[in-house]
Image (cartoon, rainbow, N blue to C red; front, side, top):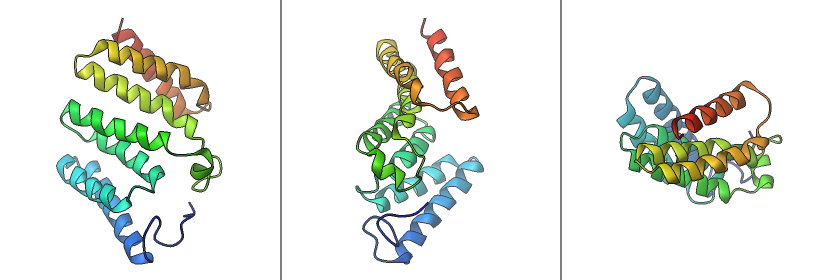
Length: 163
């Protein structure tokens, strides 16, 4: 993916900071894959700080991952809210500077589904239903592929649990 803000990305002054951010991300992924959630969280949180406010695309993706690494459902909800806020501030044009076919609308079914799941974990079924309805209303943004089929299945499964 190209970086529209030049080498190093948002607010970076050259390749050094960009390489440091890439290193944090890769180290975080490795830690998560090895089941070291606390280490992965710490690395991803450092990356979150390093990204800065302007890099909303990567902040959206990172918050989405960070939510999944939380042990506390309230912390998971907070990170999922951050992912949604980043998506809300990401224009389609900005997203397409990273990938020409990227559609921000396609982020929403998964983001709302995660929020619904978070609320259910927290014993808030009415809020879970509200977020699930948002996920359902946004499903038309998904392409027909394996990933999207998984999101649709997860929506249906959560709908069954909320009955």
